[in-house]
Image 1 (cartoon, rainbow, N blue to C red):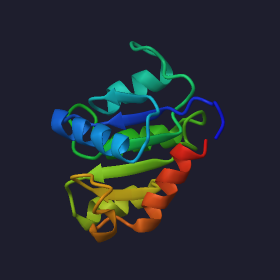
Image 2 (cartoon, helix red, strand yellow):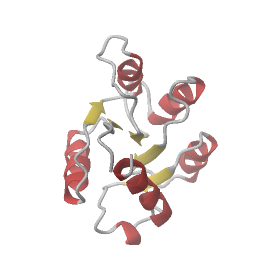
Image 3 (cartoon, rainbow, N blue to C red):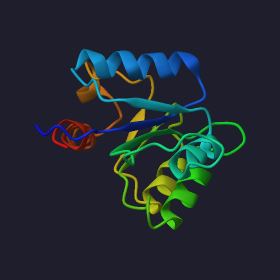
Length: 144
């Protein structure tokens, strides 16, 4: 593993879900910096360095909730994909929604995976989330 800094951007408005993600990542040995934005607008500001300190280097992966105030996850993802500097960043949707319309909208925006909350890596194989998504997520944050 290299000494390169691997940043993770977590875009989530629920404090308990933020704590859960941080705990689950620590349980599997992930100790990379986690930057938290409470909505899509705040996340874009953090990526661009506008009205918030810029995340540097650019996050290697984004964990994104769909249902948030001000700018929801799908609106954020639409904006992210329009920005050449950020369009390549793998995004994993995390949501309590099992709505097919949300899943299809996320797929059209080239998400890397879709994880149904609450996030638990212990039970990942039994969840609605795909094991392939989990493996890709680990590869992205462990091997950078």
